[in-house]
Length: 141
View: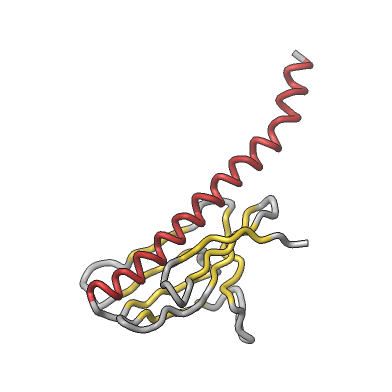
């Protein structure tokens, strides 16, 4: 019994890190899909779309002139929106960052940095040339 308890005790931290890594990958994919949907909505429906990034509430929201509720993407447990890039002088964790996507206009070149409890970070960037999001791993030293 002691050996089994020792093996379980040693393996729990690595299992928790693996689960957080999967959550981070899932959250970055969901963030990329959310941003892609916002860009597509602006282009296909030919109407302005507002994307709100709230670090305080740990969510992304999409608003348009269509009736109905706003679309929201809440980050899973253990995943936080760490920064919106490029950082602005007055950025604080309590402030929301708002982007307006216009049909036919250039997409803003922003990035959303996500992180987990184990120090892993990823950035989802909107490419202003193509309008498509891409995911980058971040190595912080």
